[in-house]
Length: 376
Ligand SMILES: Cc1ncc(COP(=O)(O)O)c(C=O)c1O
Image (cartoon, rainbow, N blue to C red; front, side, top):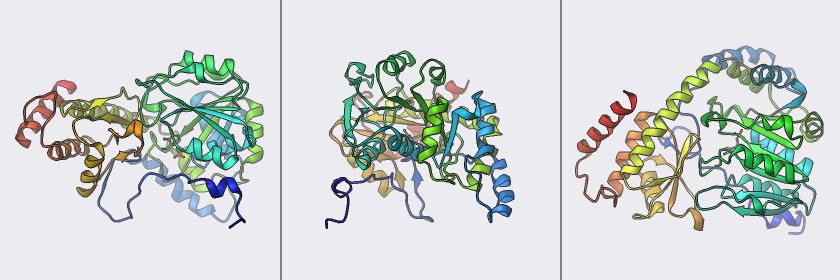
């Protein structure tokens, strides 16, 4: 039509994970939400804050920043709060990437990075991960203005070691953004890199481990001048009063989050075991989801048939991932239902077992005895 910026007109736009309409009865294992509710303190804090909705929120979300500062031992001047980490990713792209600048990230990864580059008119250089999802760091160009690395990565759930990230940070002229959306499910975080590398930005979110995807709270940790410059591009009141209050309350109940974490990590072990029994190969996950590859049955058909049975998992219609499903970790009950449904869809056959597990009952018995072993 000629009225749009040509970059925008050409681009496809980001497609968020499927969100079924309210009131429909799906088991949602497709967008890595937490199956457990947030701390009850969140509701209390939000209800109380409702009294003050007439007033604008604090522009820098000070209450939230102070909580983050206390918990993670980072001065408040090194913290910026965002309306989810997606907003922080937008701010980073707007701050560091000019039209035509180089932005690098390994693939497959979080597809929003590409969309943000396209909006900005930056050049994306996508470095394919090796087959085992280790990173071929030699491809990371020194000229990169931004390098995005989701760690743990989505959709693989795998992690890149801290020393690899340190080498990238010291080699590039721009910033290294370590997107730690799933870090609470991993063995360690990369916060230690901030002291040595002034060009590292760590992004985190309360959407996953704190069960607050609907509230939209995220934060960035970085050197003071980076925070000051990100601040210039942010909306004045980017985090709402309810999000500040609820986010601060959630962070004030770390024990609640850790308890859920333990449950999810234990369920992850059970899901991996069940899927392997059915003949899937699983990438080593340090996240609240797993990437499962299946070669003896079309992954897309499993996705479609699960959907018909009211279970949503993530299927990617791209050549590298066409044999894969990404499955979020639900409760033990959710996982049992999923495994049994997949077994029914694939006809209880798997090359590993070389036998047909003819009866559901039999499978359930195996599942329960394994569960007792893992717990005992
Ligand atoms: C790697 C990664 N980064 C960031 C986000 C966005 O998180 P938020 O809900 O804080 O915007 C997601 C969401 O799924 C993600 O997978």
